[in-house]
Image (cartoon, rainbow over all chains, first blue to last red; front, side, top):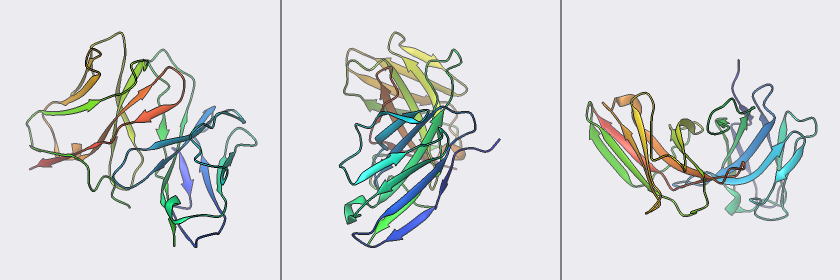
Length: 117
Length: 111
């Protein structure tokens, strides 16, 4: 089956504009995560969904960032009044039910590269 | 795709040699540790994980070692191949779902 997909792959916008980034998780995965990765750094946790609800949004940097997952599948990360510092690769990951392993393995999408001019 | 980790610590090894990538973690309460591999233009890919009550775990060509006394994690790759060239991240998890990634190491494999 298909892996995690993210659209668009690249997004260029101007400072102050609104953007939406979409994530399609692996079918059946109940958990969905958003991360932000700046050049030369590891992914930075933003938010985690279990089903439709945001179980942990402690990583969202400020109230310009918001994410939804209305039907427990596709998720959209929304950024208002974008700033140049928001430029980064935004990664989405999903995970399913733990099957006796140590960890709910997260499967990552290829990311959306956001550039704010 | 975008190249990640342009200014990361770098490890260069000869094909066929063993590689050791090290990581220091910060949270003594973390109970799971994971190694990820990230190739240019792609998202991170799970390699191997280890629980805090273990000190060693082996996979296919990879071994993870955990030293909780000094909060140190290492990834050993046996018989390194050109396809192993990537950025490697360690990550820690406190048993929930929030995963904290380290800074990463770029591995170059010379043919």
